[in-house]
Length: 350
Image (tube, rainbow, N blue to C red; front, side, top):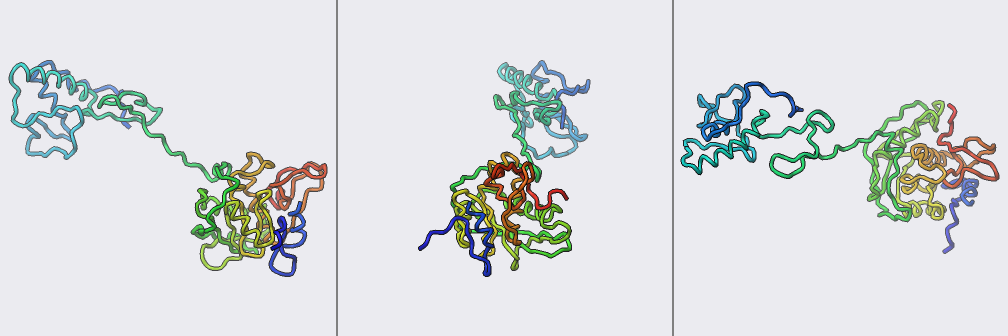
């Protein structure tokens, strides 16, 4: 079997890319608030210890050592650790009992002094009553709260690099990102589906949102109302834009006579329905764009879909000019002594 030429596709006239495209590939509660003046006092005797062990009245209920008055049942809540409860009808006698209840009185008095019957209120981190780093009431455990989850915006996600190996070869099994995104314009409508290879560890919904937003931007192929793009997840689309591992991308690009392995790039596999986006490039970008991941991902989508629409590779012809979106910007910005600037859009000035 003849070896697959590097990034070449079938010649014009049948399904597949154009010859010049092929040629181009070759190169809360405040615990510190003041307390009411009439709050419970520190008991000094066994008699007052028994009284202090009874929780303060809640919601107008009158509690006694033998239970709530007037037949009111107490709330069915578990007792707080370290809180002394006086059983009904039991009395304390003798010196030993007095000593025990005196100790209990000290513990209980310290707990009820803040009006919470031994419960500690955790204020929001950084606010009044922040207890981070203090000792919990049950002895020794830190009261440090769990860290709060950080929710990134769409723009922040698009500008973030994600870990992914340049040598990854995935399962080759795809799943469709569910949902529907209506074509917002009135021009020639293209329908597309978004597939993502299983097991990549990348967010399919972010990728799908990026495709829809990018293609329908007025600087993109929807410029001037010429086209509009609609994402579907069922039925037959005009093309399928697919996020896949480098190994799987190479296998699908080879179906159209393209070799993407040397530079680990993406391709429009024009002999198939799939526009292949290399997940390594999507996750890590390229040296030419550095940390400008948002712009790089927009360029990647516009470039490969541009091939599907019939556009070929070109390069900038003036030093210091913006690179055309159909320049192979993942590979290079400068050529033949000409320095080109990175550019993600077909119509950047609009």
